[in-house]
Amino acid sequence: MENELIIGNENMLSLVTDNPLGELIKPLSHEILLFDSYVAGTSHIKDESVFENVKSGDKLIMQREPDNRFDENAILVLDAKKRKLGYIPEKDNIVFARLMDAGKYLIAKVDMMEMKGSFRQINISIYLVDF
Image (tube, rainbow, N blue to C red; front, top):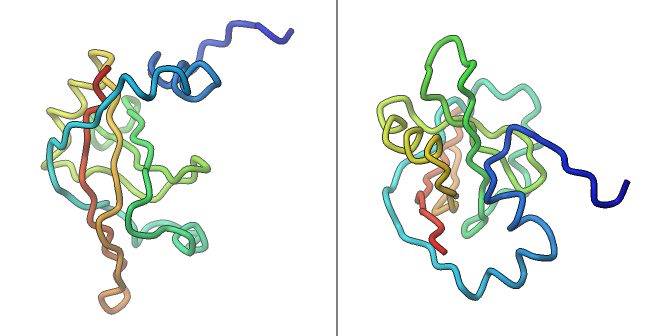
């Protein structure tokens, strides 16, 4: 069915913004800078090809991962194709997890990405998308 309702793990706002109706809402939204951080765990990503097309200014998807056995406030950072880049650092994620659990829509934008030896550093800014 074309108009079938599908329940997923994404927040409700992404259901609207990721389809044609979202184009009508975009002019009514604005992004509020909340915090500057980085993507943690990039050295644990097995398929490093995911980093090849990540560049400064790219919007990244933030998705809660409440079943994470190491951190109940875990937030995945994904590229536009929903491929895992890493996580919001545990030291920074509690407030963002609470906002996302309350239905707020957060995104990240790449500020800078560079190699530091064998380590890939991705600096990001985290935004609340307000409507």
